[in-house]
Image (tube, rainbow, N blue to C red; front, side):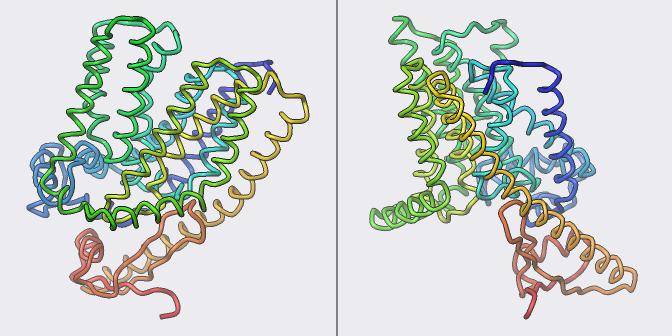
Length: 431
């Protein structure tokens, strides 16, 4: 990774990422929760204005979960054509890369952006669910952007990076703090852990309290308490029995080794190289904090009702940023061939998944067109019942469209309400 830099190439790469994410967001249809959040909780009326959302989310907090800011935003997006989400989702992908670059010394280095994009796409087990699915993107990849925005003041103060300060930035930071705390049961917890560690290290070094930083942590913690004290949260939590929690922990640990083992191996290699290169101790410590925060996000699922591939999201983002911090410190001690080998490895892993993943996205889009044509035909004939095919993608780069054989089960009834059928029945190919 040479230090030669030309701003136009960085802009060109970011424009390429924006265009690519916009394209595949457009090719990703509505699925599962997207249909449900088109309707207000309680009245089941179609959400057509922002004024309906507060009452809907109040009932949502009682019946479903405490992520009312997240799902309120989902309902607001679903009022508008999906094109709005597609544009915002592509913009979020660019924002994530810029936030990654901001945490690194080589902030304007094209190679940093390319390496970040490669790591995030290659190692995210459920890329489609966390970055393309409307409800999933707002919950996961948009949440990570908020976490990194919240963490930046703590990171900058710890690393000794000058940052602009003003009353309106402080006010905006406090708003972000509470919102970030309410965003995710696992991701917000990881964010709070990292913020507390960085704030404590800064206070110990400077020998004085940072009241603004402490207030931010307090507000984020208040948001997390608001999230976790939702009446519906207790009903969705897993067993608190020690043996059940241990069993869940072993399941999560096994899945982590299977899906992220190579990522952690790369991290260990870069950690050793950074130490040998006598890299900046503060940045190496920051990398270790982010790694532990990511692992903490996974450990929270020991007490969850279930564990899915999309739950790796925050862990992958934090670990990838941690790895880049270490790699940056290790590079000065590496020769030309080790640098090229690392770049080649990332390129091969990325291209292998890219080819298969984009084919999967195309197939899912084709299936959605066939499904929509079948629905239009049934509605034109005045039919009140329809049978639709469930389709599960072959990779994690797209999102499954699944229905239950029983029309009374979710998400069948939400799909029926959305299109105007009385009954929707699902089946899998070959049944």
